[in-house]
Image (cartoon, rainbow, N blue to C red):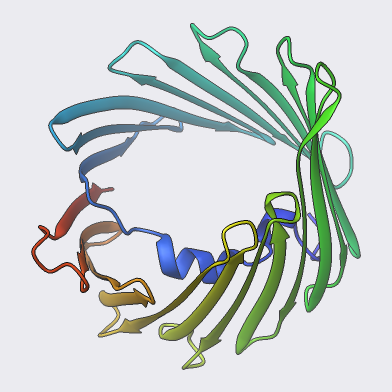
Length: 276
């Protein structure tokens, strides 16, 4: 694939990941194994509140194709097939879920040195199509996406964004929710290895005049342990500790409290991911 501006979904992704990725109030345990045939098997158990669920997934890579199948405890089967470079600089992703026969989706991504284009069609009776495009370079990118439902003849979404990135920092502005919201974010790396960073994000919803401002940070204690924290203007304080117990195996402990309602019970999450 080319080193162009990336997909529209990449705009603002670094700041979003720092503020949201790995934060959880659930208990999650997963184990991955690899077979001699090149198949990766992953078993996952999740406890959310008083409900426990689980799934088993298998990933097989063959040349330019990746086959991903997952079966959960409710007998749902999710299959995803990804093909790279069937045509130059393209990626095709087909997915479906059983027994929901109307959940099929076909997505085609095209990458160019100065542009990317994504087209996705939902294979059900609604006949909906989603299109996104990004123009620019790895340093600055402009993009937009739209979803259209042919049955109702209405747009289901339209969003626009811009991002500026350099080795030390990145920023983005996204106009979303059909023009009803705007979000701006800025992330700054505090060291050349990008192990520590600070981030700020401000969003406004025009229909409700609601503003949300969030600050957060990442700090690497050593090469095995890192901590993250975030706080918004509504008083929600979150923190996370992640430690690499053994090579590629992670222990993540996260929590959240409402500083404006300390009488409420804090939320805690625990995730263990074991990989050989």
